[in-house]
Length: 426
Image (cartoon, rainbow, N blue to C red; front, side, top):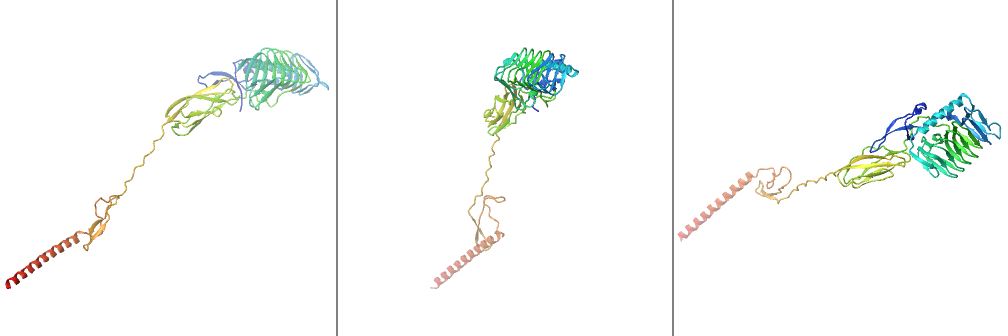
């Protein structure tokens, strides 16, 4: 749920209106604790009233009050009834128990609103401002004629304005609420009296110590509640908000809070991405220092990306800000590990073919057999086994050669002997 947190000091009135005080640890480099108000200011039974006066309620013209109208402890209510007088679309409480209780609840709510610690002090002129949820204070607050004030938030955002003295809303002015926020959660705590100018378009609940005056044609989306004085109307339309969040509803912190976890580990030479996230209204933007070489931060999206170049660990300081104090700072560590080494393939020895070796066969013929130096189980220079033992044919061949040689020798000797005998016979 969208909500609004405001810094405040603890007061005894908080318990009376059911506000919950808690200690919040802000996500900053130097942690700080503060007490917060959760949700809208509790108006109690006064929340149903469009107009509540203390001494009197006076009207001129056809004003319309949507909501209850009451007075207490005074008794005077004038200018309402049959046309052309004002009309009350609710219940009129004239000095009864309900009006008395509503006055007590108004006093309690006034004290709580006055006790809040402001996010921004010293305001005077509201013209042209666009304000995020928070507590704003000043002496005499004013919105000059034809001026404009914008309140930018979300569904349950809360604004409290503290005027130490007067509140003056000029003629033809406009207060605009954006982002789904509503007049339910806009409160004007006024130290003396408030005046809403002619034709002004006003939003919020006025909690005035003294009186409230709405001049001709002014419209109010909210409530006019006076603690000790009168409420005076003139042809106005006052509409008390309905369907407002229950007081005590947890509220969203408008100031940013970083919610992202620890970064993942990066690798040198490889693309990397890490997203910083934060809550807050308006949406925070980001800055960073100490990023590893090769990485950058997108200040709008919060994405840290790039290709890191150098291994090591870097301490990175990240700040989220959205114009609502305080900004939030956190530190993270981004580790860049070295790139993984590239594996070198081991070369495979190739077989070297050798010239065929001549091997005699069983018939005495030499057979050419290829001998390989590669391959498992083969040795360089070995003859391939052909299926028969070469020893036997080699031995036979040797014997045949020897026998042939011996026969040749005998035949030669015989021839020599014959030739010698013939020569002697002559």
